[in-house]
Length: 408
Image (cartoon, rainbow, N blue to C red):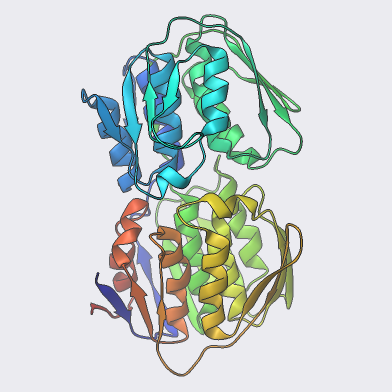
């Protein structure tokens, strides 16, 4: 596999003309549009591989579908196929076969779906059989599981003859993703009634509409990291409105503590380096777990100690992201330790004089989360193609703001 060598650049400025569209919003819009008979116009879809894969699989007439390593694609398609009476087999990569799906499958079975596990109980691949009718209009799911399970059930709920009530048990994580799903369903004419830990969705029909997908705040977060670690920089991110339905917009508040000033001007987002930075940061990533791989590498090289919670879901992502973070942070002498169950302590390190190599673990966020270290040292990023999962233009955008990158 190839690697990408990046030369250190402490000062830079420039414009990112086209930031990626939201993969999360795109994938939900594709599923909801399919449930409404593909009568809507969805524009500005993400170029991310996961979104293009979702689009292709929804249109596929094949009996066997491969979701590869795309978590949302696997979970959303499972629910979609199960309740729309489309018998198929659904599989994925070796890593996908290690990511649990049992809670979603059991919820679908209670509603009336007929699904078998083809290999290991509770994990893909799945054999989805014909849907013979709704058996129950109520399900329960733990609130701390992947919000993708909850969103999957929410989106298919209106097409069920009896609708669906979803009871969430215990503490609910990733609430912004649940609210995102509800907001998008509302765009297509379906109302969700969210009351505490209860989500009530009556039987109704999705209506044709026009939807334009907003920029992806998970992707935007990496540019905040570049500015935070730089000696001096100004970046303009074009066509980024100040309002968003994405929970990851909270990166604005997090990075303000780490020395980044964000200004919205004429629908552009301007990031500048400020002289004000906290010495200690405390954050609960329960509602924004994808930001951990952006924030922790910044803390590690800005002498900012941290106390973090809400990282539990990182264990079952594209890789075990907690272990991956620990491994890569250690390369600059930083440590990430679980001081008590669910509580992580970060002790910063310092940039070495020599080039270091970053392993990416088949995980797009490891590549992009650690790339900003190139503001302080020469880097080599293994398997740079992993960014295609969510942000295919990432390396080109780095070049456009002045970084020198070459294949090795």
